[in-house]
Amino acid sequence: MVGPDPSSHVPYRWAMLRRLVARTFWAVSRWKLVSAPAPDRPTVLVGAPHTSNWDFVLMLAIAWRLGMDFRWLGKHTLFSGWRGPIMRRLGGIPVDRSNPFRVVDEVLERIRTGEVFGLVVTPDGTRKGHTHWKSGFYRIAQESDMPVTLGYVDRTTMTTGLGPTIELTGNVSADMDRIREFYADKAGFRPESRVEPRLREESRGS
Image 1 (cartoon, helix red, strand yellow):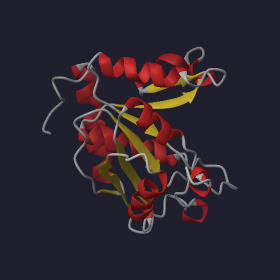
Image 2 (cartoon, rainbow, N blue to C red; image 1 turned 180 degrees about the horizontal axis):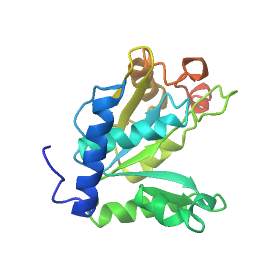
Image 3 (cartoon, one colour; image 1 turned 90 degrees about the vertical axis):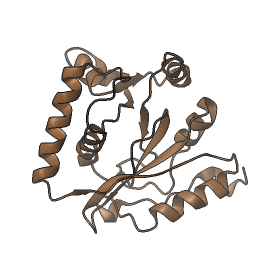
């Protein structure tokens, strides 16, 4: 992609500015972008291993360099006051934890209006002590009929980017086997905080 996608909902000047910022970042960064092309349909974009808040910076740089629109979920308090317009401009969608199912409805409504975007979900979190991934990304993908794109960060090779886009089958264990295979050699920004891609639902046989 040599320029902003004409079908994008992002204003042209903002698209050009963020692409310039991304090119500058990759020109000076020690990290290397090794990526598949951006998906051409709405997708759930898994960001893993998510071990540091620096992953957000890399996510911006990846998406902006590939000309990809993305959305991410954040607790609604992050969008209060002066931060709200900034968070929304950066792709944020506020989540009211008292009504989390509303998120899927909003995602579906955006798809119906013709938006093409990656919905970034970080199923392993950044806090220590996690032993499993959260299954929200899987449920959202199934309920919205979106595929899953595997984004990654690997400190051992200093590479980051987008991996394959896969269609979920509904067989949780089989789907997670494919995801585990991809992330087997991906260490994250802080390898000591990496969580193995495994859902609690797998042990319950669902």
